[in-house]
Every structure is written in C-alpha cells, then in structure tokens.
Image 1 (cartoon, rainbow, N blue to C red):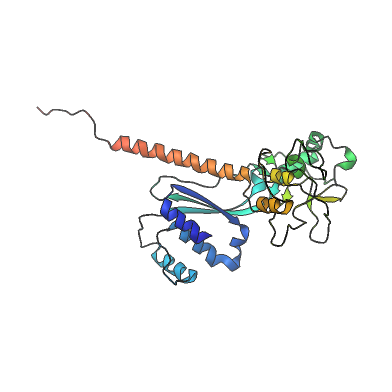
Image 2 (image 1 turned 180 degrees about the horizontal axis):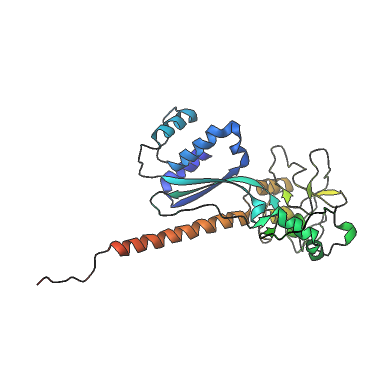
Length: 300
C-alpha cells in the first residue's frame, strides 16, 4: 500500500496528504519499516530501483535524506492517536501520517484531544451521565468511589451515547433506520466479552475469516451480549444515519471495520486545511512585502 501511496503523491504532487494505518506499525519489530515508510513518503521521487528490496531502498533513503535535494519533498508528522480522545465512541488506536510539501510555510502539529476517560469517570461519579440517559440506580453499573475533580475536556463518548434514538433491533429490521437488523448468534467467551455499553466500544474489526464476535458485540450491564447491527456499528464509526451500506451483514461489517472514523478524519482534515490557508496568507503577505513600489521618486 505505501509504495502505491508514494507513487500517487509523486504524480499528483499534493500540497498535503493524510495517511492512516493500524497502531501495530509502531511495534519494535516493525521499527525499521515504520521509519522507511516515513522517509518514502517524505521523498516520493526517490523511487526504488528495479529489483531493490525495501531494506536496500531504506538504506539509500537514509544516506540521501540529508544530502539530496529532490524537487519534491514533504515534512511528515507521524502521530499515534486514540479516536476516543476526539469524540469517537470507540477506542480505536491508529497511526496517522500527515505530510506538507516542503515549499509551504506550514508549521503543523496534531490537534489536541477534546475528550478524556477522566471526564467520563467524573460524569459517572456525579451522576450526570446516568441522569442524562435516565438510568435508574440499580442499573448504573458498579460504583467506583473516587475523588471528584474538574476536567477541562469532554467525557469520552460511550456505546450508550452513540446509540441514542435507535430502537432495540429485531430480525425484521427498522423502517426508519436503514441497516438496523438483529444478527443472532452472539456469545461471550474468554477474551471476547464484547464492548461494555457504558464505555467507548472496542475497535471494530473487519476480520479475516468472518467477523470476530468479541470486538463487534455489545455487552449490557447485566452481562448479556448481542452483535452490533450494521447501523449501530456505523454510528460507532460516526457515519451519519443517511449513509447506507450494501451487502450481507458480514460484508458491511468488514467495510466498517476497515473504515476511518468520520469524526476523526474530519478533525484532522480541517486542521490540515486551516494550515494550508494560513500558509497561503503568509505567502501572500511575503509577496506584498517584496513587491517593488509602483511609485518612483525623481532625483534632482
């Protein structure tokens, strides 16, 4: 995927790009390959030679990184993020690589988190979370006595938050909500206990041989479980309800499991757009400052 991405960047020469992938890339076993990806995206014109392995290409990129001045270079900012920290009702850790073309005056860093686990604990402790969902005391989950404190961020959004307004699914589906059909057969087993309703969901997964149950399953306060419907999963990925997925349940869930949360993508893209606009303003101001004056003085 990454060589193809670098080739597209080489051809299109975009002012900026955004690439997303799994957090597993940051494991120590993949350290060299992760560094190679960043250099490959930073220098898309330094393509691999015929028969050259990625390791040999990586060594050449390292050697030429500081000495070669390619016509096309990018400043690449790598970040590991949890989508839950940005309002997505799902703990979805991902690597995001953002690159700005080197000819742009754009100093960019990843947007600061807007939500936190601490804030969610606080609203549970003060009761406002339960009151908002009209949950009676016996169904408020296990109490966790902790000292209350003021948190500057918003609470993590939970599964219950995401599913507000959706009726309990049936095998016949819903006339009002598309893709909201009960999928029977969910069961809990060690290591696969589902996503607790009053926490952000576990990361939805596409699965290799079918959909994995534990990650794509909801666990209620009483411990009972059921599969998320396609509509519920789309909400966990922050897709709007008007977005329709086609095909059987497993195929639709595979598409959602491979998707980037819409809200996270929007936050990153909006920040990149803002910095591109600022770069344009700075460039325009610089041009005005260096432009010769239209008036001339005569020397007597």
